[in-house]
Image (tube, chains in turn orange, yellow):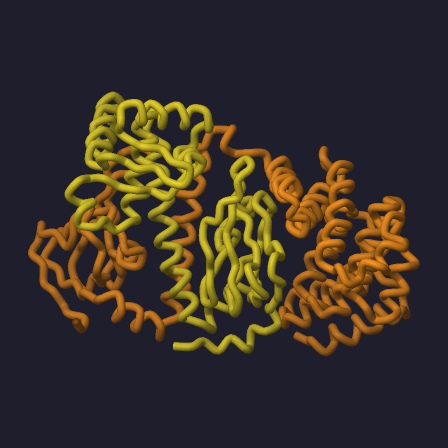
Length: 318
Length: 220
């Protein structure tokens, strides 16, 4: 059914609360009020629709009943669209979609907050404990890959958390089990040095120099478990591996994490430089420039990083 | 209409089968659009891992992270090799502006989420614990299409566990179990390992609406 204009007399109803939402409406002329009860206070609310505004969209999109009654206040003209026609109309009007996304996300944020405020404290499990328990579940069920994944995330967010020691032990065990399971063909080689397979910075550097950045990254991360004193250096080098692997989003996250945890990092300039370069590769020029400028001010004069950053900034220009 | 998202390849990330994409309780600041492959959404309840949904190319997940940096509410695991586009709050606008089709999809998803959250709010504001649990079943039934026979008898089968009901009712597992057992002793529900049968959903409807009315009267 093509869009059609419908004339309503004052005091008539476009739809009632509870009616199934099949159409979307635009107020062309007149005055319409959306009446509903505030879910928190039960107060009667009246939202007036401006001419040119849509209403009934959420129920039509979500395929659920309207949660408000649309009352016509004075003689009005309303254009009625099927969902398909309305989508057609929107698909050529990006500005309207963006505006609606903002309105909807604000509404969603508000209701989400209201729901959270009602949940009892027992329901809102402590996030640290929760993340640990996810790892525990997989570990106890011998799903070592997922266990290691979950525990490694735990360490990322809670490097000094209450379960840290236990998590490290379990990652080590899970990694061992994972290798046995997934690479039976490798068994003879791994058996030789499996039990005392230690990762040192040097091992990781060797892997890195040979261009095997994925393994080098893992080796750097694991080397920290054997020697927490080298954390700063190993983490930094692991970030460079990610950069070599051309994973800009991971690089940004990795170095941002390092700087958050170590606000006085000795290689802050370098970290900022790699964040800046990664923003450049995802073509976020503004951010890239910002980070590179900060990097320039911190890096020592004449280092390759500083010269590269200067060149990039001048290329980005305005 | 097939979408050409090749310009977004710089946001592409690939996961192998079994990889965790993100973990429940982890802080999150990105959301994902599936390009190829399959992912499952799981939640762990005690010692049970429950698959809530399987998602396919063209679908989003993690979009709540766009709103606030709340911890993730479920774990996402790649079922097979999966290619995703990863966005955060900053580059999300670029994607939406260039792709009305995707923006529309997100609008629809938001519409549904708003409704779900409002419904959840209604459940949580019920004071009576029995009514709370009954209202969870009503909410679940609203998402189903009943067969003619079910419509007639009011009998409904829910493939949910006690843990699911507990989650939606926002009460302690022990309390929720006690309420369900009470319903079972009244022969209003039958509880199985993998499903719960409500004998007469209309009976629950009456109960919830009368409790809600009483509650409103007392408040006013």
